[in-house]
Image 1 (spheres, rainbow, N blue to C red):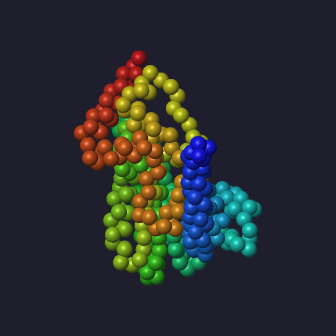
Image 2 (cartoon, rainbow, N blue to C red):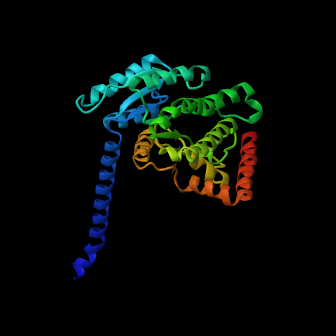
Image 3 (tube, rainbow, N blue to C red):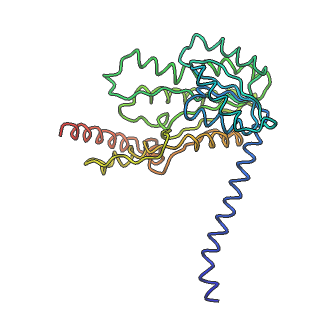
Length: 310
């Protein structure tokens, strides 16, 4: 009886781990089967996240239309995808040149996209541009460029593809956004503003097109990085501001985000926040205790300036 009591907890944990693993495996297989034969458009497919999204959707049997600014990089991605996939189970991707920040060309590119298969089932708005700096140091021209890439570009392409979805009464639009669409982080005003604007647009769009059986999903990671890293130690790391906002920069790997995008498409989940508990708490504090949030941010700015002076 004593031995059974000792082994009970490890066996229970082992059983829970096994069930969790089986559940995740089944969910993953169902997610892949959900996109089989679907026409999936991915913008900025040549970025780190774009490549991973292309990989998971390609192996899932989707009919991909990959968009990017550089033809050579698109061809390299094409070669990488078809070299590792079973040609009897996958489709060769279509390649389209697209600079999402060039608003004037998007209507024509959208026609090219629709001509590939005659329809779009899933549009993944992945393209994004970042900038960091104090508000007074960022030119208005750069502010506009950020808005074109992160807001006007995605909504222009979405508007161009939307009539096709409405006429077929089916489709899904995915916005890969950022936690900075939920909270503003100092020295990233232009980027945060563009991400807030995108969230507002797609939240409104979700309600407007629900009657056409078209779903809208937003995936908001903290920060997409190529590897997991910890910040370098410093004298001001222990401050409450750093407790919140250094955590935001830990980020998630593109593979994790791509797999979450696939699950989101399969489940048609409306919004996903990919964040560890600290930045997740910051979002809730900003919502329910704004004065506390603003005080933390202001304290962090003062401390940072003091550290730089020293």
